[in-house]
Length: 314
Image (cartoon, rainbow, N blue to C red; front, side, top):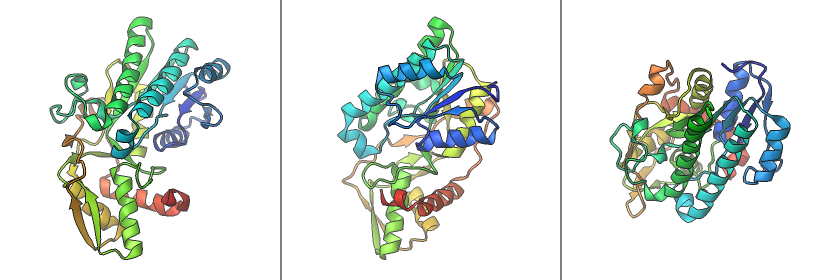
């Protein structure tokens, strides 16, 4: 168990996941938190990261920092996604080990699993097949991070764990028109269509892919839970165990936002992986379960979107 007065470093505290972890830690009475903005600490610079850990010596680390984006961003910047993610995670994990960090938790992504993995995907299906090409670079970087944690545990007896979340959404999401993930992209698109009185909204693909979504505050709750209740080199899946089609998701977002026009599908655009559902039985067996149903979560996300004009304009 993390001591209440322990020094805890949350890497990526301004992002959607990192900010949710900070909220959850504060809620549970952990207040000795260390954070740094990108301007204060560039995690891609080994010398800066080593200096930071040498000076601060955090007891616990939540590694939620990452370069992230949707299908377009991943396809257009393959080299950047691989380099930035691999460098920053290696720097943080290595420096944590060198400075005797008690425990580190690495945040990955369900895209690490094979494109055609048996569904729902168990933690054990890692590296059993080919990755989805549209985000292969990001997946390879994340696999390297979780494997480095595993190898440190085996070679040096560290207590470093990994969590692999499904598709996330919630407060502080990225609503960029070209670089966001599917759910925030839909919120932005349907909000604009409603505001501008558009008769129809065009969505990518054919709407058939199946997806699972987890509200980010539920993930943060699991992250703190695992830091206190789990040790092991195998990663832990984070999700709801429920899925719906992109078509159903689109209709749900339109309903929450109050858009009543037509939805059309552009089948010339990529669908991505046909199905991505996590097997969450490991987290369940440890005693954890998600709390936020999708429609409630979308409503909370839309409220967050509306309450922050600069986020809506990005």
